Amino acid sequence: MDVNKAMVLLNHIIKQEKISEPLTQADYKILRANQLSGTIYPLIKDQENLYKGFKEDYFRYIQRDEIQVQLIKEINGLFNQHQIDHIFLKGSYLKTLYPHSFMRVMGDIDILVRPESMDKVHKVLEEHHFKNWHNSSNHDCFIKDKINVEIHPKLDSEFSKAYGDLFLNPWLYASTKDAHRYHLSDSYRFYYQLYHMIKHLYHSGVGLRTFIDLYYLLNTTSFHKDVYEEIYDKFPKKDFVNFIQCLVKRYFTNVGLLKKELCGKINQNQINEFITYVTHSGTHGIGEDHNLFIGGMASKHGKNEFIIWTKIKFLFSKAFLPFKAMKGMYRYLRKYPFLLPVAYIQRIFSLLFRKSSRRKLKRMSANKDDIQYVEKLFIDIGIK
Image (cartoon, rainbow, N blue to C red; front, side):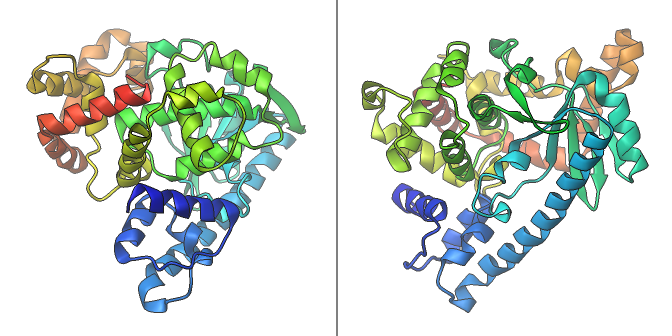
């Protein structure tokens, strides 16, 4: 799928306009990897043989959305009843901006609470049949009706020291919406969305859907320019902010937050390269031919450096996580931090003997040209 076709289809989704041109099975694979196949189904002409997959995904999207929406309502009611301040994050909020919530597929229900509420959260959720199955320093996980719920005591900003405390005080940008449910400023959410884009570009991949998310965020009535400018001054990747906004402005809307001369400096070829990369990576890097490790290796690659050394650095970064992350994965470190070397050995054995990890390690075979291509792309868009 070329750039123009991809962006035309996204515009059809945003405007909810019928699509007259036929799609192919190759288009279906791309749209499915970008979690848009079910979203686009109501807009395409009914050619049953060709569009069987689109139709099945459409009903699957609706079914999953109904379960998620009911769980969101249940959790909101429980947290209001028990006076737990909370903010719905990521897809849990973004789906409310779409014309129909099923259009915005999501995996987990992400919720931010105050750190001191975590014990109460565990008690309340477990009393109402949410099973706690995993805990870490960034979030604790519960499952109900086969839907994963992640409770965050903080917004993650640890994958790069450059972000410092930018996302450590989100409650300063929140206002009460419903009893103990808070609404996070869409201007703040916009930057958190960009942060997550960078994180996923490094660690897996992002899909076309993210452009629709950004479009809706930039066009909400609660998007405040003063908050946008305040955070812009603190955001470490300003070139990426400019790049993304120019892309959204060029294809979808005149958002009016950037000066024309900033967009004028951004090359259309760079935009095309990025859209192509995003299209084929798919949401969370699930694209059929996408190498999940390529972004991580490109981010580690140094100038005039041998590729083998780049791969070694990348492997070390995967195996030897920071102490905070290790403490979240191996709870005994909270009481016995001197056992960190033991935890590293445990993690290495887990990576070596887990079938999925061994399968992923095969992707380390990425060649020099591929790594350098992605590295140049990251430089061009302003994240390296």
